[in-house]
Length: 113
Image 1 (cartoon, rainbow, N blue to C red):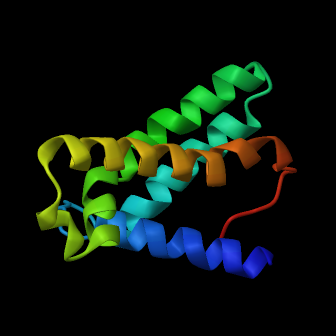
Image 2: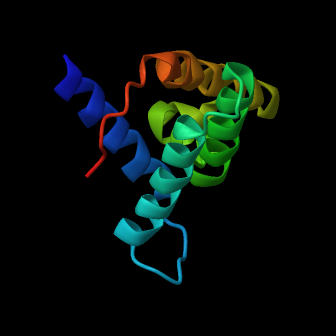
């Protein structure tokens, strides 16, 4: 189950980061975002809500939720109105947050390689 979550996260990251221009390699960019998240998770001065908000901020910088939502709908994206697209992007963002950000409290000091 843990492997499936890691695979799903890797797929979301890969889809979300595709198409952006970077000065560094994708691996370096992902490492930088991961380091930011780890610092927030390991910061003993942050409250649980502040920790969640810090991770949400990093995720907002790292993930192109609109592009990922568009790819998730595939051919159906073009058939949707602008309002429907906006609603879907918001619902998709909430789904990602429920699936990943709600699990922040489970972090127990594991290393990310």
